Amino acid sequence: MTFAELDVLRWVHILAMVYWLGGEWGVFQTSYNVTNSALSLEERKRHMETAYRIDILARTGIVLLFPLGLHMGKIYGFVPFLESGGALTAMWVFFIVWLGMTWAAFIKRETDIGIKITRTEELLRYPLIAGIVILSVMAFLGNGPILSTEGTFWYPTKMILYAFALCIGLFLRFVMRQWTVYFRELAAGPNASIQAKLDKEIAQARIAAYIYWITISGICFLGATKPF
Image (cartoon, rainbow, N blue to C red; front, side):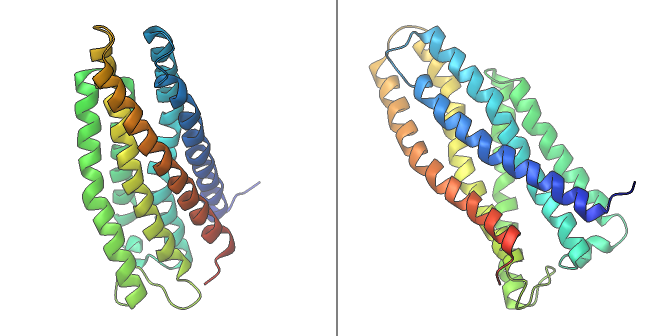
């Protein structure tokens, strides 16, 4: 039995998307108990731990989606620069390092080193987001390293939506990172000011989460239908 490279990549790509979308829903639901001041601090911390354990699957999916998409794009002929010697390997090495940082931050969660790793990983996203947007716009203009013409514009559109999703993800990651900081202060005793910050940020995060899901669904739709 043999498997086509594209089919295997597509299968992993679907799994990554499922874990991304499903994981975000799990974190969303768990957040209600994390910020519920009627629960004991220990109970809220248990829910926070559950949220972190669910979220790592979503974060893994997020990181894997882009290199998988680029790899499939190479096979489709959209990303010819990856055909040059060592370019594909270098691309995967970069994203594996990124994934390693994501897991290191998870393993060291609720520690100072974990917060530092998370912040460093977040800083790496800014140039990545800018690069994705620039490459996508150049593809629409027909003069970039990503080849796209009429009938294949769904590909750079997916890239732009992915970059937008990363922006929303940065905000959601900030909210979750702040949980660690806030719960350290709540451990010292009830703090109305900290609780108010939690309530405000989670309310904003829930609005962002709905936009997040719509964006993710849009990415799925474009990949499945390739409408333009």
